[in-house]
Amino acid sequence: MARVIVDVMLKPEILDPQGQAIARALPRLGFSGVSDVRQGKRFEVEIDGPADEAALSDVRKMAETLLANTVIEDFTIHVES
Amino acid sequence: MSAARVGVVTFPGTLDDQDAARAVRLAGAEAVPLWHAERDLKGVDAVFLPGGFSYGDYLRCGAISRFAPLMEEIVPAARAGLPVLGTCNGFQILCEAHLLPGALTRNQGLHYICRDQRIRVESADTAWTAEFERGQEIVLPIKHGEGRYVADAETLETLESEGRVVFRYMGGNPNGSLNDIAGITSEAGNVVGLMPHPEHAVEDLTGAPSVDGRGFFTSILKKLVNA
Image 1 (tube, each protein chain N blue to C red):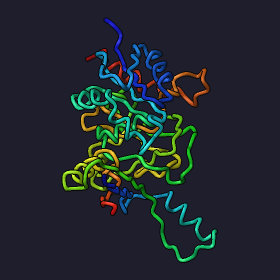
Image 2 (cartoon, rainbow over the protein chains, first blue to last red; image 1 turned 180 degrees about the horizontal axis):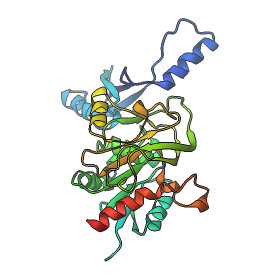
Image 3 (tube, each protein chain N blue to C red; image 1 turned 90 degrees about the vertical axis):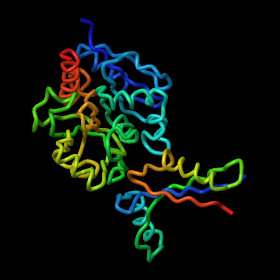
Image 4 (cartoon, rainbow over the protein chains, first blue to last red; image 1 turned 180 degrees about the vertical axis):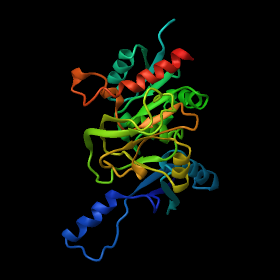
């Protein structure tokens, strides 16, 4: 058993109005010094076997095919220790 | 000669399939219900992907629908020339399926927008817009939360230079779409996607802002009958 984390973020050039709304809300709550917020998605993929190269390659395919839309989003993969 | 047959797809969460089927029938074609879980296109001459919230918009709008068994039939058929129209969620599905370039993201103002919208027909060279005039202004309802069309600069340049921007918003961009884009078409002109709803603008009786939506259905009908 292993847990592989896939983080999906809108590409930097894609407008993130949700992140902007959060950034605008923060000063009202008393949090200062925040220059920007971007909102993304985190997927926790539980795999049966070890997180070896083949398993990570599969997760990468999942991310490219379904978890992220690579037209507008980037993703990163790491194994949770 | 038998009537042209236009398939109307229903996914779990589709809302506009009944209006779509009705619009198809009003134009004089036969509306053929197509269920997302089947692999059978039932020999239809064209396909309409209506709006709604297929699969609850889970993950991203259209992201799950794209892999429905029926879509695995529609995608190669569309690439081979089958006319396909996607409105609203249907447009989102066509982009997720890579039948159309780019993507639809959260409206710039974050609000769900429901209003009558003026749009300009930029191309009459598609299977679904031949009965319009280029430059014609029409009014159709829009209702969406994720209709901001985005694509990289190169794709936008290609769409513009090849005349593949089919519709542009007029009188104010409702969602922040790049280049005011409301709808686009594939390279071959058989696949068209747009955020506005022609199927809601075919009858005075329903309080529609216009009957401009009829043009989509008369366009496809004429093409199929003359084919």
